[in-house]
Image (cartoon, rainbow, N blue to C red; front, side, top):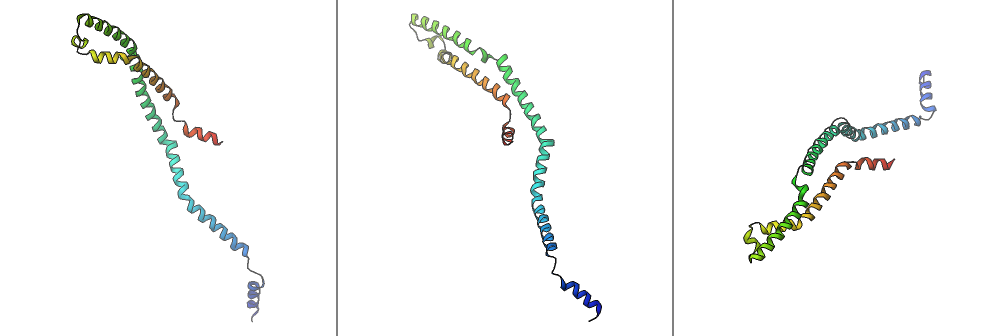
Length: 162
């Protein structure tokens, strides 16, 4: 053997192979594989969060604001200008008038519905007017309360985690 061959063989076979290097390369390759396999998930989550944070939630807030404004206008209009707010008074006034009609009809010996075509409807509505008015007021209070609560469920859950 020539001197060069002896030196090369000696260097190649005299020491055991560096297994740390191959383990490091395997470790690095497994991390790369994990990153590549998780990238789609990260990209999808990032894309969705970015879209909502920078665009869509602003659009939704505008839609909610517009919707609430329209509803507020309707609710305010019915409560301030609507006839429903005077149902309790209209009902009690009608009950008094129905009672007078019934007394007069009895004196005449006729059925009150013979004197007034809308007698049955007027009496029925007047009898439940106060209850219906109370339901109206309770629902109005519920609408006002709900409109001030908003959509806080996600954030309240997030704050509990901290």
